[in-house]
Image (cartoon, rainbow, N blue to C red):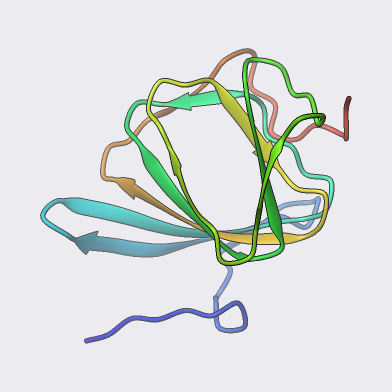
Length: 129
């Protein structure tokens, strides 16, 4: 059976007070279990710096996804990935992400991938320079 999602057909499972949305799309056997998640990031969302213990892949379905390296959120000098981009986030590299405009991403991660925040956990930051 084929599974498919478009920005208009995602059934959001969680909605945050800031308008962020999350949907766990499922687990798929690709020679190992892979988790797929859809996430909508409202304009101005910035996640605290974090690391993953295995590479993850992010597909930008709509909007522009911003990615920065380091342990401090700074919106200058970000890499910006437009709709249609596929990004590999390497393991053990501190980074942060967010968007200036509402953005829809799909994330793929091998089952058991762990995310750890670099500093005290805080989900969103206002725009900072």
